[in-house]
Image (cartoon, rainbow, N blue to C red; front, top):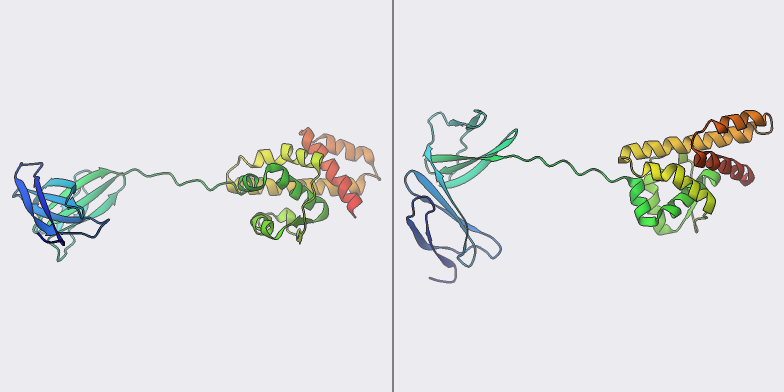
Length: 265
C-alpha cells in the first residue's frame, strides 16, 4: 500500500459480509466514498484520509423501472430517475413535510425518507434596540430630543454612519441636519423621552417600531407647534388639549419640546 491509498476492512451492517480493499486516499479534511453491491442491497462507505470509516449505510435496492419514474412511499408523488455516468450517485427531492433521497447504484435504486423540519426565519432586530445597545438609551434619547428642538444633530464622524440608517426612515426628522460636534443632553428631557417613547418602541418588531417612533415624533412636533401658536391667543384651549393626553411623561415631554423650540428660534 502506497501513501496515496488507504486500507478499509469492515463488515456489512445488513448481511455481515466482510468488505475490504485498498482505496484512493482523499485529501485531508475531505471524505472518500465507494459503494459495494451485495445483491439485494447496496452498502455505501465514507472514509477519511487515515482510512477510518466515518459513515456506513446499507440500502435495500430494487431495479430501476423502465418508465424512469418511481413513487414516493409517503405521498405517492412520482420521482424522476436522473441518469448519470457515475455507477453510484444520490440526489434529493423536497416533498412538503419530508425529503426523499434517491440512491442510484448501477441499475438499482433505493429511496430514503427523512422528515423535513422548517426552521422559522430569524426575526430582524429592531434598529432602535440596536442603537440603544451600541450607544445607551440616554445618548440616543439626547440626540433625538436635540433634533426635535433644533432640527440638527451633533455627532462625531464615526457616529454619523450609525445614525443615518435611522434618520433616513423617519419622515418626522427628514429635515434634520447632521453636524460635526458633541451631542447635547437634556437630562430631564431625555428621561421623559425614554419613558414615553423609547421604552415602548424598542420592544416592537423592526417595521412596527420605526412606524411607531415616526408617528410619535410627528405627534410631538405638531403638538409643540400648536402650543406655541395658540398659547398666547387662548391658553385654556391649549391646556385642555394637552390634558387630554393620557400619558403624563408624554405631556411633560411635549411641553418641554414646545418651550425649547420657541426659545431656540
